[in-house]
Image (cartoon, rainbow, N blue to C red):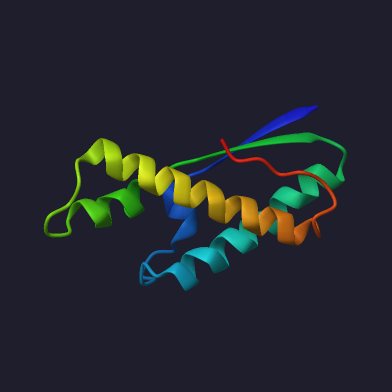
Length: 99
């Protein structure tokens, strides 16, 4: 069975946490453990994700780029972080692809 899991941008950041790369990576690693269980059960997995808090933070910076470019930047970053976390949890025994 193919399973689609959607992680909102808030899945990377718990209420009250500082929006730091360390906090966001930790939360993604926690999610990756749960996602790996889906694969371990023999399912195919597609992960989608949001980027609201991340793009919002960048948009408020002085001299921010246009929102479409910030969206592309944060979507790519988040996808890469999820890919890294899944590969680590899966011990690199299967391909993980980010689009």
